[in-house]
Image 1 (cartoon, protein in one colour):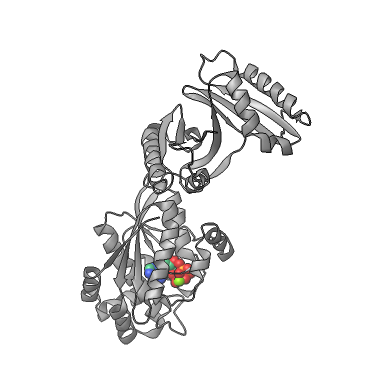
Image 2 (image 1 turned 60 degrees about the horizontal axis):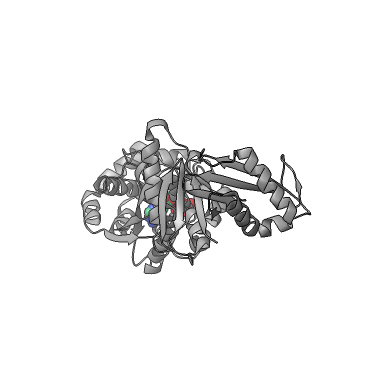
Length: 390
Ligand code: ATP
Ligand code: MG
């Protein structure tokens, strides 16, 4: 039996004049998400995007899994295709929905006829199909308010479609529709979640990762690549810039007071990330900071860190508890990777007693006296670029 997937564009949050460009972006993202699986024809008509497998042996499960990760889709239907006659609709529905109907006690048929040339009106389609279902599955009764199974028949320009279930989409808005952002990515639990959250709100992503070999290992870097790959299954392609950070961290250790190691390191991360963002046409930074989670995330520490970049910094986790963050990381399948035990550069030379209430003026003075400009330049000229695909 021929199956198709119907995505209702009416269900995405579409904004006035932007509607068409949102829809086009969504279609582009759907095509991208489906590269590498069974070939599909993707068309749009009457506020619906049709994903139609080209061959009978298409892997519909895989197609649905991929679609469930495309931001901008709230929900979609897997449907059987019938010819536009009552005989074909009935025959198709009785076979296609057999499993559903056999195990249900109550049902209801809802018909939507957008092709007004079809001879039966919607209530007549419902009545006729409902009668045939009752004939074949005599244990069923009709419940129009709260049925176990709602059978939907859509009679449209190019065919009739029958479905009885809805698959939840990832929600959000299409990736790219909000522009481009740069995620500061560590190997931890938080930053991949922050990246996912901003991609959900329509940002396409670049990533910056600070590595300090030999204090941090290649395996730590590989862990970040694997995390980004998980994020990319929602966010599309991501370019990762790895910053050689060893010299800078050693200089912090040698030239700055111990209690300011972390805050100065974080300020330098911001400054370098902003430089990379500007070079790569990205208009904001994203971090996985959450207020009060650790010493470098107190209000004063964040204010002091934030001052190092002029660019807007999004911190989507700012008001979330660790538990809530972990829940998302499990859902997007990054948690198990995040908890692998490799050193991040943040844990290199960590002071025993970091300053939790740094004074901006003093921190800036220390940083300026140490003089990092040349090293920043060198780091930026020696970025390693890795292309991450889903
Ligand atoms: P995460 O779980 O994301 O590592 P965290 O709770 O461990 O966060 P920190 O280590 O203080 O907190 O890092 C705060 C934020 O700084 C991270 O969420 C990330 O955005 C950024 N960050 C930390 N380490 C790195 C790194 N090595 N490279 C790039 N960004 C980093
Ligand atoms: Mg961390």
